[in-house]
Image (cartoon, rainbow over all chains, first blue to last red; front, side, top):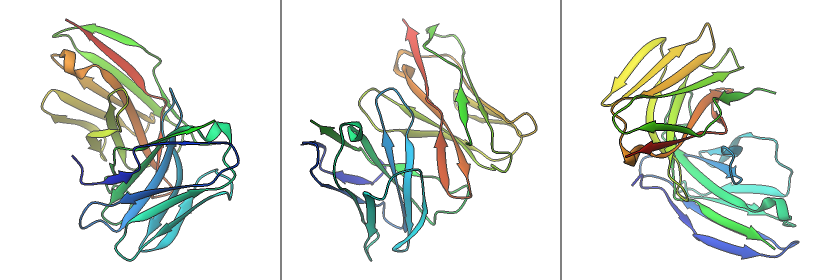
Length: 114
Length: 110
């Protein structure tokens, strides 16, 4: 166990709806990264938060947004859900987000969009 | 588009054999490299990280890095059925984000 938790475990939504996914980082970690993993593919970087600020973003549209709280937990929000958003959403925490800092993954949230 | 490529699987090896996994990357500026193991339906778990050229051993696992050739590999010695999983190569880009390959699925035959 990495100490990174995510909720909910599974979620079913319909196209056009909005969803919020949550992540609690490992104790002592101030950086959270979010990834999307479609079936049969490697995880794709969505964005990273370091000390409540967005530290970088991957090639995802603005309807993917996030937030990090003072306790370093984080949320991923997705608006106007599309069928292609169906995936495993992974949160990873790390000590300070620097190069070489190991990222530890939570169990993920499986999102299905119908 | 920076890329991480892994050898296509699936890779099937008999129990006790060596499984060899390969990964190439395009970003010459990358300095940190990771191997994660992912069981079906689960999240990735860290196996090893490597930063310097050469070999790094941890138990039955050996990671090899050659920055000049932009190549990183993972050897699994004395493969066990519990090693059956998808192995993900990850490269740090732009100093903070992990870029993953598509993964290589390994099946260890008893």
